[in-house]
Length: 217
Image (cartoon, rainbow, N blue to C red; front, side, top):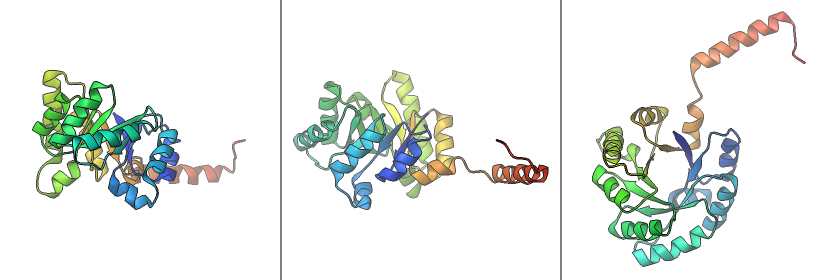
């Protein structure tokens, strides 16, 4: 499974990328607004830190305008994935871009039929939002399971990019289902390494080592 980081915080991305755990980055208008910085400047910096896909989202809602914005974004670098909303205009833009060999991440997916449409339009990634799905009383992970089954039935190459991840259990369940990618906030990625028994064991080892009076090196 690939790990993408869902943030526009360049410092966080650089720190996490140093671990070798980060395969890509996703951004959106809300994350850019939170950063308080220029959109294109932030995306350009991120694309220089992470060699893998960096999703940059258009803000236009009509196909022609989406394609015009996509031209600006894709000029940033070869690892830019154009992020488009799952609307008819977005799907038409996805088809046009994918036919040119451009990576497209279709976002705001909340149903398996929507995911099927994105795959048929040639999307490189589909981003189903599990956390938001859970928020309104649906089972977000069931959505991932359904998409996985459909994609496998027809051998679609579109990668399932699990988004709106709220906690480590979402990551675990996505991995068990066989999702290709999860995009997670930095805090969730860091939480994957945490376990009280690891902390307790390390504390015990350090205490025992101190009693030896030795040092290494």
